[in-house]
Amino acid sequence: MNIGINKKKSITKKLFIISALMFALFIGTTLIIQTVFFQKFYVSKKKSGLKTNIEKFKVDYNKSSSDERTIQLIEEYEETYNIKIVILDSSNGLKLIAKPTKNKADITRVREITEFIKQWVEEITPRNLKKFKKNKNAVTIVTQRKPDKTGNIIAISPNNERDEIVFAITSLQPINEAVSVIEELYGYFSIGAVFFIIILAFIYSNMITKPLIKINNVATKMARLDFSEKCTVKSEDEIGNVASSLNFLSENLNEALTSLKDANAKLEKDIEKERKLEKARREFVAAVSHELKTPISLIDGYAMGLKDNIFEGEEKDYYLDIIIDEGKKMASLVNDMLDLSNLESGSFKLTREEFDICNLIKFTLKKYRNIIEEKGVKIELSLLENTMVYADWNRMEQVITNFITNALRHVNKNGTLYVNMVNKDDKIFIDIENTGLSIPEEELFKIWDRFYKVDKSRNRKLGGTGLGLSIVKNILEAHNYSYGVKNTDRGVKFYFVV
Image (cartoon, rainbow, N blue to C red):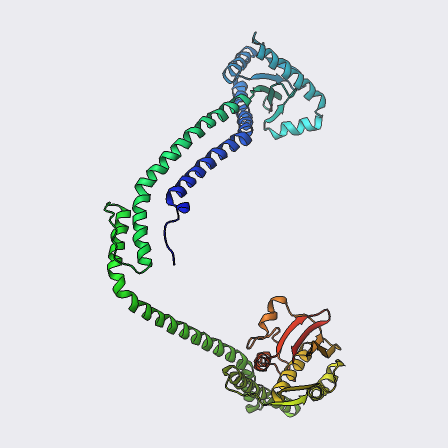
């Protein structure tokens, strides 16, 4: 293992790049924000300020007792806030307006607001006017006469106390010049930032990089199990403390390393083994308890009822049959668990012989003739006669039995079972497909697990301990046969290849 300092990945370069990126990000973000949002923010502040000023004016205006005082008040507000104010009476006629000064901008504002008021009066309907006065809130409108001209902000506020409407206009000064100045300022700032980054990286190099390089050299040798070199960093800070700790570690590590590795490896192995055993025990106990709970409860309940002579006649025979049936289920579960345990332990041996697997399939289907007829299930066979295989007859019977019972358990009413054999590439593909509901895709890989059931039904005639497919899996794997399950357009298909 080659451990050393890669100059391309040195701390100095990393610090330089990070610092440069931080400043570039900061400057770029600031420029973007001022370019995108500064003008909007400026307009928003102007609108908010105009609303506030017109509301303040309304309060002072409503307190005034004469037109002379009102004109004086208007002039004070216009001079203080650089706005122009106009008041309309209840019939939308001009009531009060201060005389424009000789200032060209003031004359322009008077002309623009009178033109706006004239258009506004012509366009607003009595209904909208009534609704506007009822709302009581000031409304602001941004006007732009021409693309190359300065726009205005006009505020309109109902003065319901005097049944009047107050208009105020303020100029929306161009801000392009201010934006240009800011961009130029940031250009100079960016140049200064480059020099600052270089100085900052140089300081980092001397204060942090050099002692870290020394520590890295010692740590690199320690990684190669060479504990001869010590750190010479003497600074009384965190880096110096790291160097001292590294020296102390180097002195003690060589002595303890070998024994620690051995002990740690043994401990991890023991812990992992115990964890797996404990997990297996918990899963086994939980699964068995779950499967035995229902039959035990039924047997206990019905046995107590029989003891107390609650049931009589045919009802008594019916519940005795249930007790016997549940007892058989428990016996089947125990046998399946023993069978599965034997299969999973690898202690069993296959008794192989040559036989016709087509006959085995027919033989197994005959055992369930009554159930097939009772459920009204149709059987569609496509078998290859005289198909000889070299396998364990009893175990393969278990496989086919489990596939058939599983298909019968989930086939829809008056559905169909398709049993097919196909010779492909010198291999026999055997599949059993039932019509009905598909298995959710996320559960397909779980169905081979012990005690796993797609549905939780307990068919009295077909059993269903949740171990059948797990047994099938182990039998087919012992034969080195591939197998699987998939959803089809008609339902679900289980298959294996011999």
